[in-house]
View (cartoon, one colour):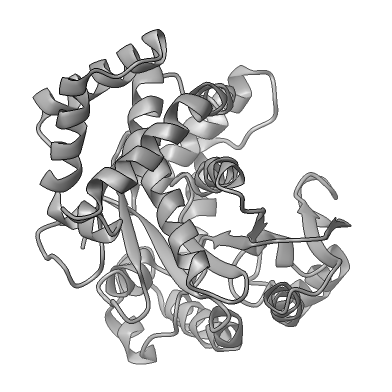
Length: 363
């Protein structure tokens, strides 16, 4: 979509929510645009035969949900109302409809993996999808890989065994068996299910397991995290790894973390599908983290200094470097169903299925 068309789309959506009506000419433009981006249309299952039916459903949901979505996003710090409306129409609504379609094809709950690094919008995506899917008649449950962290006591003991684990997060710091048990119970539609939850504020920010959430029903499970679905790679790859994997110690640490990924494979096998939120440049996560910390400090809350942030982010790059682990993954249609590019301003960009294009630099 050209910038001129994008501006016109935003005008149409704003006029729609202001007047609660959509003109015939605007409807025709929405239909044309839905098919014009062939990669996005293919990703969302939109064809010339079903475009009217799918846009009818989207058009039914949009007036009902826009105010709630705007309120949620603005409370989360998204200031651009126009961008929220555009993202709701162009991404969140068609993606939710696609998830509902995938769920209908199953005889059990859909377990949808969402992979995305820091600042890519995993939490916002899961929250908005849950809201939309509720209107479509589906109970949605969001679980983060963070909810599977080992307890504070277990991680303290783990740190004694391996002092390199200075922060929680990398493979090896989670209770994988707990995750397998929970997802298996959800898939088998056991009820009730105790969903583990993690409170990052406990123990001066070290975090600990807190009271589980009791869930009676879940039609769709959104399982998100910064390395959900990531597979081990050839250990020799680290012989010539990118920065900050520089020293022999760095390379040994990366190899050890790569080995730890093996124990997560049975957990990944429980995923029905995987979506990847893929920044146009992985280094943006450092910029986004600094912005987030500065915003917290401006509100009078405690936040990390830029120096600590750089150490923190580079620690994760040393653990599972995006260039080594994520870049190959988004090219693999056997492991990934959908890729959503994330622009430098955190807005969503191209949406496509792996293997359908090589036109994007970030792929």
